[in-house]
Picture 1 (cartoon, rainbow, N blue to C red):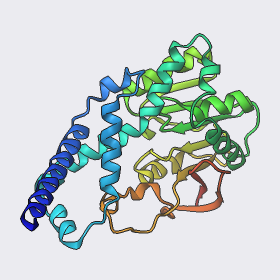
Picture 2: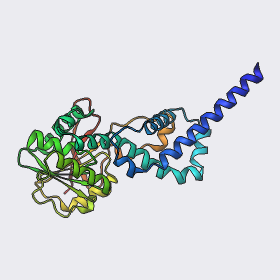
Picture 3: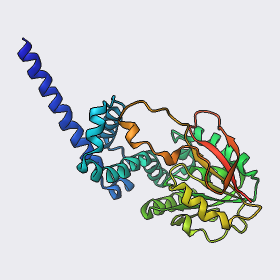
Picture 4: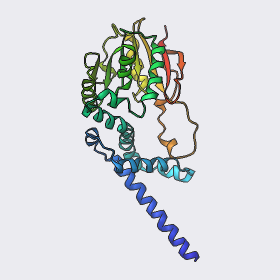
Length: 286
């Protein structure tokens, strides 16, 4: 009986390792171009992402942590893996954007978006952060495939905007979405990054998205461009204490609050639930 028990435990262990390897490789080699054209949820992607999240929450022993950190193979794959793993978080937005584009009633379809209420609270906080009112104009760095920030700023407050998106195909999808909502003359999507911003003339407020990185480089670029009448905010997540699991190895410090060189934080705004983004209002030191 003892032999049988050990044999079965060994088989289960091997199966788990094999499943982990498949999941890691699958996410590492995702074809993001295919994802961008998707209107249906790929159950295989969802299953692998959930599996990876479960693995990430497993306890990481010092021995295993040392083995992972010292593995050259792991280090080589990690950057590519994280790039695509983070891309899967856009999956909901990509699917929703495609549904809106194909809908006969695009605004009605958009209001069914899972995070619609959360964004309403975030936008209310951004209006407070920038002291915005109808007729103002904002720049949003990292607008994504479904630029809810920009859509809601105009739909609820009459505020026009420029969204900057670094991934060309995501920017293209976003422009199609804006066109389907008949907002192309109110919201402009630019393919580029923070270096695309050459002036802040006639811009009341700049928003740096949670996923826009590296934040320090973005802020340093903007510093000489900001006028006294242009305010600036960035989004971050509440700090989560180390839990001693695989997640700790891939924690994105870019998404935490910090004081940046040459800037002072003038206000922290916690939007009402269910949003998880916190807003820091900053200004250059004189």
